[in-house]
Image (cartoon, rainbow, N blue to C red; front, side, top):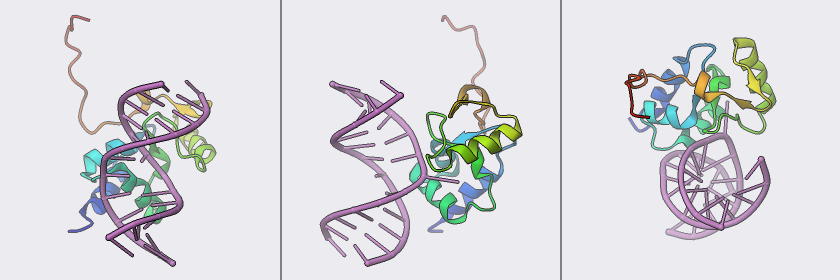
Length: 106
DNA sequence: GTTGTGACTCCAT
DNA sequence: CATGGAGCCACAA
């Protein structure tokens, strides 16, 4: 029960479809982790069986040491990155559907 | 108990 | 875009 997030986090990451990406903060929020740092730690410890390459930072850029590796794997899955940055706005995966595009005033 | 470190995020300058 | 500071959690020494 202590590390319930641990299991939850892996489930969420494993649930990310190919061609999509998620941020540490999102995984943390969805999995119920207390902090996004835990996500990084889990991946570093036991992310060998998970699509860790689909996890990006809040600004759409992967970790410094994985930057090249991540982008390569993502590129193969159809996620094209501009330089070292991925279009989160386009490839960001969400568990819940976005708010209806109601005719907002703006 | 404190300190340092890390695949993090946000805000201000 | 770069830098710094604060918040955050877990672990090793």
